[in-house]
Image 1 (cartoon, rainbow, N blue to C red):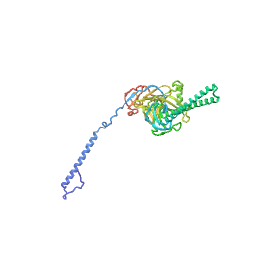
Image 2 (cartoon, rainbow, N blue to C red; image 1 turned 30 degrees about the horizontal axis):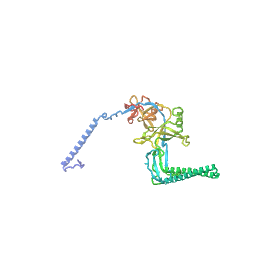
Image 3 (cartoon, rainbow, N blue to C red; image 1 turned 180 degrees about the vertical axis):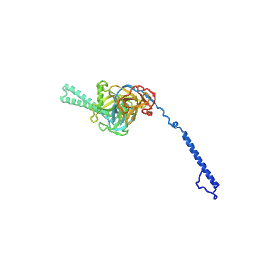
Image 4 (tube, rainbow, N blue to C red; image 1 turned 45 degrees about the vertical axis):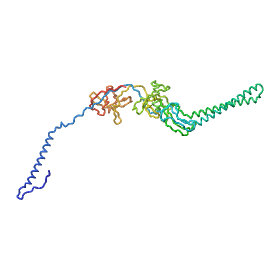
Length: 424
């Protein structure tokens, strides 16, 4: 509806016209409508109740609690190690020639004695035949000179042969016998070179890549021989790691106290784990090597532990040469410790903490100093109230929040559900 603000128009006689009267009626109706709307608005505001608009209280959060667990634990020292083979062989050509066959599959496991490569045998077979002929000739000469020597010896005893003839026959016999031995040595060498044409793996293990293909010329001999491939043992394997001097001294003290095997036995138990094990150490081994000196540049000493590495089906072997692993070595005696699930711990600006629930069903924060990990549990070495340095510890009766931690505030009321920590 559109309103005009034109001034009222009067009839010359001073009387309003009909159109002027309609406009004035319209203004009156609009003013009456505004008055009624204002009255209704004030009535609604006057009837509203402040108490009915107050927000509802939030529900008490429900959390799961468990009591700490006490048990005997072992202190460990942790190191980073690398997997090494017990045996490693560089397979090189023993004789020079053309490769006729390289039958192995790179990366596969092989047995000791498996054929890895073959060099053309024909030149070496010919050489062997030549030396065999030389041996036959030398043996015939030796037989002839032996007969001559025997005849001269008999004639000399009858006075029918001179001393000079006897000595010549003796020299010819000895010379021909030596020639036989010389040819036999050449025959052994020829046979050996022929055998070297077939290269076999000296150990069982996993073979590497094929570095030379069939048809290529390879060089043999004691120096400069062509490298064909490598073979490393796979079971057992060694894990090499470096131990600092302080830990070494603690380890030796444990040996002197009888808590670990003596150094002569070299069978200190160790455990290892890979990244896939997520903090667990399921692999068990024993220390088999301790170096004879500490590296003065690093202050560490090299140790090697042996681990069995059986073939699993499916999946193959767990360890492979060159892998990085985490190693833990037992240090010190067994001791009692208080453990809680890992899920009970939270962190704020580097400070680890947990919540306990008191008798009034109120959550109370405790700052903690965590210790060792054990099968999903974490040791609580110290526990104290924020703002205090006194170690109150974690009591066996404390109810520790293990689930629903993100909904808890210090001093807030909670509803609890009990959960028992499974014993390890």
